[in-house]
Amino acid sequence: MKYRILLAGKNRAIVDDFFRTMDDRFECLTTSNRSMDIANHMLWFKPHAFIYCFASESKDDIIRLTEAVASVEEEYRQIILIGDPEHCEEFNRRKPEMVKMVLHRPITANSIKDKLLKYFEKNKVGVEKEEKDDEMENLMAMAKSFQDQEDAKEAALQATQENVHNVAQTIQRHQQAPQNATTMMHAAESAEENSAKPQMPDLSSLPTEIVEMKHILVIDDDLMMLRLVKAELKDRYNVATAVSGKVGLKFLERKRTDLIILDYEMPEENGAEVLEKLRANPMTRNIPVIFLTGMNNREKIKQLVAMKPQGYLLKPIKCEQLVATIKQIIG
Image (cartoon, rainbow, N blue to C red; front, side, top):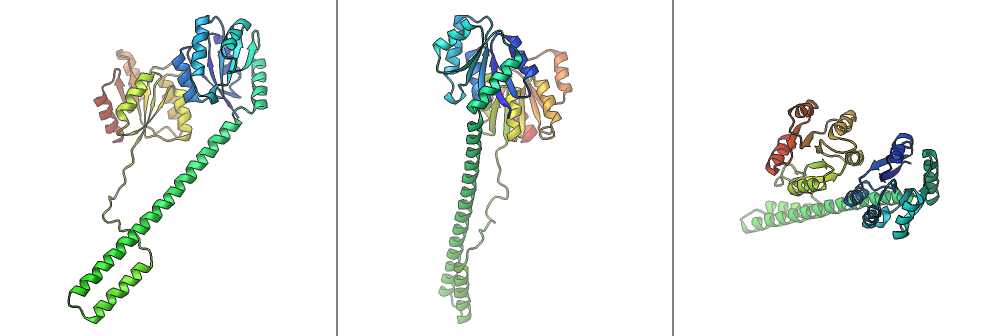
């Protein structure tokens, strides 16, 4: 299996080594040194380990770091430190219960990789969680299947009761009106026959189409923008959010969406690179995309339009324009 690694820290050389020489065993994502970014990326990406690569961090940096990792759920606190002894010891002194491994510099990329794999395999990192996730998905599927069966039984029972009631009313009308014995007997036989077996529901009065809310995935590194868009759209659409292109693409490996709202300017992978990956994948190439951009440069706007998204909106976005653009594309 590939282990998900969230990376942060000022030692860019070690961070780069993870992407250049360890991508065969690790799925890596970087985050900034800001506490909110670290906490949110850990919750979104759900890494098997958070690795901080020290270089020239101050004590204040380390204090903010310990506060950030302490704020997330315990199951994501697989904290591994790489750096000089003084940096690692300062962090470990403040939060010793969270540090699972310390690797002191100097250390080679191959040595880091070997030590991490041995630690993960020895401690079965990720195995138990993946099994729990699979078990939860199976339980949810079973619960949905059971509920569907119960709903079908209830609908059939209700239809049978309504049918019996209708037949009883028919008999009553026949009894009140002058009817010959043959007609009366026929009504009674019909009532007995219909009450003895379940009847299919009468669907003539139901709507011919059940309308399901369309799904939208919003990808933006700005948390305030994610909250704004979700708050505006949640009453009309099912909305999921992702704080980076990598997280959004990971989401699409398991889920489907009807529309993607994609920030054009993001660190690591910008909107153009994410769109290229979407178009290269047969499973996602036909999903319509709306770009969000703060650019007002005419030439850059032309480059954006040349990528042929289904739409684009300039930041700060106007909510009514956002809704109108979405309606025009997916209804």
